[in-house]
Length: 151
Image (cartoon, rainbow, N blue to C red; front, side, top):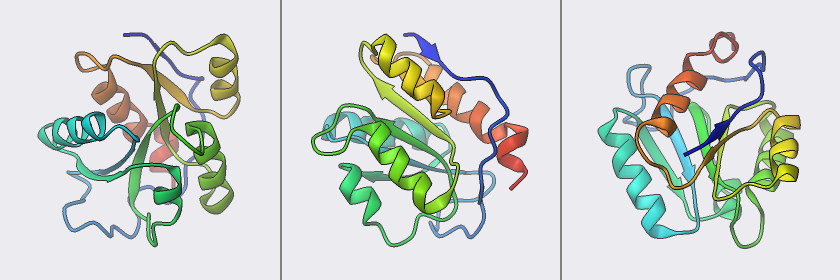
């Protein structure tokens, strides 16, 4: 599994402010998973919960964007290839509403163009298949970054 991530220094707002998920806490940060494939979504939810994260999941970008309250999310894990809005489209709409957010894009075989667009948007890519601890480690890195804690 390959991973790419733009350099550090991005500032994210509202990190762990206004926790709304009853299972989320600084010890169990809230991760939002967005993937149209139910098997992938459920597997990620299960795996992330075992790793100690609180998880909310959505079946697509429209579902996420219509959610009434996303405050307190420490990190978004968003699939790039979904019907309707792509992962980067969802990221753009989220950031229009909430400012810069910690996001990890998951995808198979990212093109050079996608890698460039993700880097320009300050979005990390973790390549599928999601084997080992690469995704969990990247989530922890993003949550623990000084930029994330500054808001």
